Image (cartoon, rainbow, N blue to C red; front, side, top):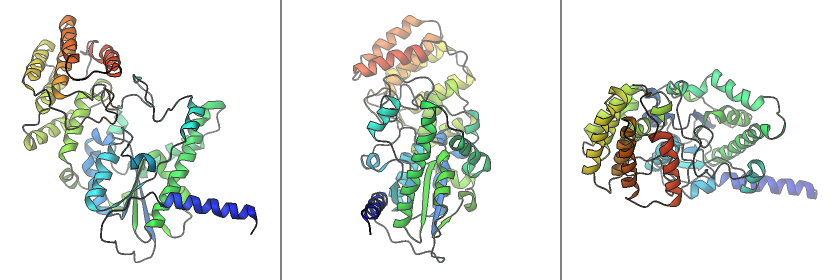
Length: 418
């Protein structure tokens, strides 16, 4: 064997070892081998965190589906190094709040399968760490802006990514003609990233031969992952929709208390009610369920008041006074069940410009929003001073508060859809 062939074999073995060693193995009883001796691959394409918006796409549907599949391993969209540190993408509710806890609770192996360019390569392409380095103040709308679910995404159901239409959308992105210069980088990066995801999935398949491996990944990656792995004769690719959709009753039974808090927070406190559609009947149902299960939850009165403001047109001054009463009666240490914040140094999250505030602080902020809407900016300014007198405010958090205050609190909000 020549030196070049030896180097090729060595490189191949290194790749196999690095890709096959990414699964975190659970303590569980081994799953019986499949009768047909094949390994089953199921790639469920998802829209990140849209589970917080749509009634027919809520987190219970994904849990009920995993119950049906009964996989030996679940592959999630995070790279191995970050996953090992407990570092998740902030906007992937389906990963850290659904798939990962499910796997750990049920003794299912976890395999992180995403791929990121090196930091040096990121700097070469973007001029900075575009993927992992957020700007101090987020733009309204871009890759690192606040998450807003649009009307199309509101209508998602669990198996939307199996459809020809969704596959075609992904193919159009990857197969479009090459653009000149930097404009072609997202397409090139997407192709390579998805290929490397497929290689890590292959490592998970090799580690779980004759069993079932479920991949939960952004839908733009689904079709190409399947295309890359389709030539493996020992792998049987099965479409998620072949298992049948869980009923609404089954899905609702798998909706957890933390999901209720997250759905309420996203639709009431984040940017969603300001810039996107909201299924108010569904949010109302969620609040009723949360009230029955946790009537003393510290955030519940705040949720109820915000819901009334957004749906019933409570006069601004009346709402402001109600929020001030809530602030006065709320424990200063009370925190939200769900904040969605990964970087605790920041004030914001992908879900909410003010996501890292406590319940009492948030009541003060909402009172200021309503006083501003009522045409009393001086009272709003007083509440801002009161807000910043509580807790710890770094220079970064103060700068974010100032920017988001001007964007979301000071402007009149009478144009909100009721």
